[in-house]
Length: 119
Length: 116
Image (cartoon, rainbow over all chains, first blue to last red; front, side, top):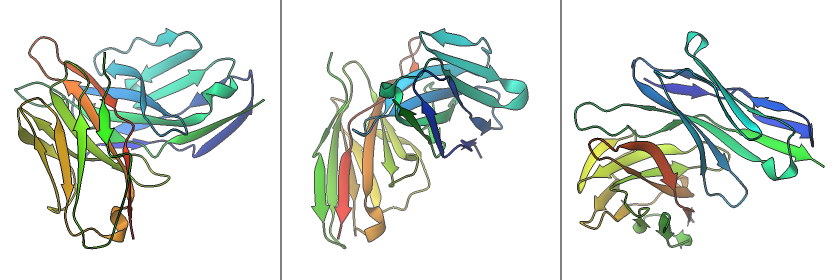
């Protein structure tokens, strides 16, 4: 069975600080996909990034960066120079690839990390 | 480019009643997944529909059922509502087409169901 663990329930930092959100996953599949989603107070989940299990290259997008390490089954998310607008609940999620017919399985989410950026 | 839409936004039902929630996928998407998000928790996968059939199901009882229509829109039905069914129900769409499958799921704003 697959599992995603986000050990940090809540993180509070002052604006402009860097912050890292941790994500550890478990899966028996060799092909899988990892995701990060942002859920602002409005409730709608916003897709941030997808990573394939066969691509360990780290990625940077503006102030956001992601570190994927298969050796430790981790997919951590770092926000550099945080801003108040980054305040939200962030979810890490895992999806295993389906068999013939393509597509991906339903997502397994962690419990989320509530990030609070104080001005 | 229309995103995922869901209706209604909010719903209040009484224990034992039945409810139907609706979802229209993002333009160009053919696969719809449903999730239940209890307060303070991460979303939990209910089931996924593709080509008008239930393709995969999470750990939810048979009281939860669904349907997908030829235009890819979908319904989630919950029978014999329990107090514990109170949650935010999220619909997500994705594309499953040979050669262009997108594994990202895009979510709608959700339907907030309250069971009293």
